[in-house]
Image (cartoon, rainbow, N blue to C red; front, side, top):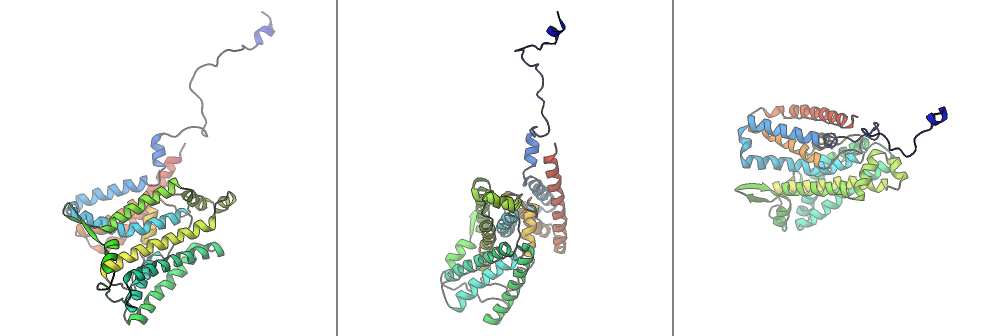
Length: 358
């Protein structure tokens, strides 16, 4: 056999069998790593740990009425944490959300009482005012290019001062008048602040609204074009604009969504207590933001979910009421929350690094 014949390659011979070779770019991640990549996984594990902890250390938590109270506290945080989380996924956040809740309640209460109108008139006007505040924040951010921190900090100070000054000017006091005997109050209370019985346990309607809003927000994020826009503008607004995403509309609408949340929680506060203290709400914005961060939303935007803040709000409600049921000094509440926040951030960081490891 000649050298040429020996060097001639075989034609039509099937390739040698063996394991398929892949590089780091084409390797598929395991189901466990794909699960860890979900932003709500870390906070879910944390919420389970906090629940188990208080079930052991605070026996009253095991009672149905106690759990209903914990869920109620969680819902008042969670309803606002949802739009705040969507805004954070969109790359912005709102420091005025806490006092905006009180502004909404004050508007509805004083307008209805001072002009002797049906309370639904005040409710509708308060919705318009809340949406206008959100639209103003969003418009200022997209028009000026200033960080949302500075814009909403200014709005926070304006609303805080106006809440106190206008309430004193109109009512002569720091609180609004009782509106429980006005037309339309019972119907509004049924929508925003009623209770119903489940197995002998009184459950607040806000728990139902909280879960409904969470389901709706999840559907919007994962199944609609608008949800894609939110992730896009939070990841890189210039790239999003280049591919046709309406960045201005998306950001302004997200701020208005926070305004809607502030209106809803404000109406709950008003129809639960019949009156509003004008100095309240300060500091609540940090609770809403912290619940979203604990829920896996990044301050840099472009990452997060609507389910994560649900568990984040539950952790806040669990700690807030669990400390009371355990008989501990409630002064430790904020310290416990700080530890919980740092722990959740570290867990989320570990989860993300684990999920993206090749």
